[in-house]
Image (cartoon, rainbow, N blue to C red; front, side):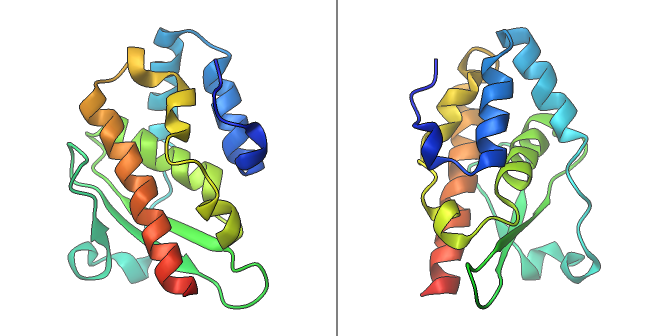
Length: 150
C-alpha cells in the first residue's frame, strides 16, 4: 500500500504510517479518533491563539499551529496545535503531526514528502476536503521551519 519511501520519514511518523497500513479502513478511522484524544494541551505561552499561532484555513474546523525551531545542533522542531475537542478528525491529524514530527531535526521535517498522508489510507474513511487539511498542516509546518532556519 505504501508509496512513500520509509527512509524519507522520521521513525515515529513511519511507525504511524505502518500502524494505519496494518488495519482496515474502519479501524483507521478509529485509530485517528484515538489519536485525536492524545493531542497535547497548549503550553501557557500559546494561550492567546489568535495572536501567536497561524490558522490553517484549509481545515474544516478551526485549527491553529505554532512551530518552534531550537537553535544549534540539528535544530529540533517543536509543534503546538489548538483544535476544538468537537473536531476529532482535525485533532487526529494534528496529533499525527505532533507524534510523528515533534522533536525531529529541521532537515528531517523538511524531507517529509508532501503527500505522505496518502499512505495513511484514510481516503476511504474521510473526505478529500479533510485530507486537504492535513496536507495544509504539513505545508505550513515546513514553511515555518524554512523561515526559522533561513
